[in-house]
Length: 228
Image (tube, rainbow, N blue to C red):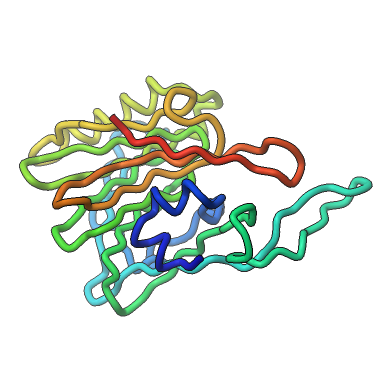
């Protein structure tokens, strides 16, 4: 079990292991990324940010070595299970900046923001940050794929129509609007904590939503579904 296997085949790896991304938001520079343009025409309620790589910088992953947590007599206890020591261990992905292109393309999330990016021809795998109510959209312009991650925490409720409207507003302002092909919507395509990933197979992108749920204290279940 290794991070290399997860990067090479995220959908396959996630079918046999419990995987999540670190929950905290972080500056895009941590992933070798930068904001290259912004949109803010909605009275400050939400914004949009386009991301791209910093020249000469790339994204790399590692698994945080920690065990599953459960509660015993009201106190959180961490099982002495190191990552890689069993399919039941909680594999938490930490994102950082690297100097070698491993083909990883990562789209950070930001509160009350549509973050978006183009998947360049050298991309081999794609990942969002964690999703827990967010909507993710994937679309094409010619041969190019684009990804959008819509978050609207300040709306107060999980309203997919709000996030769809946000993404549409951003899309229509692009020089060439993207034709949306796939979507991962909360309570339709996933129900708990997850992420969206993609990988190139036989020259074509395939995208998946990974959904992790707590079955009982200290025990998780995970499903992987290919996006239609």
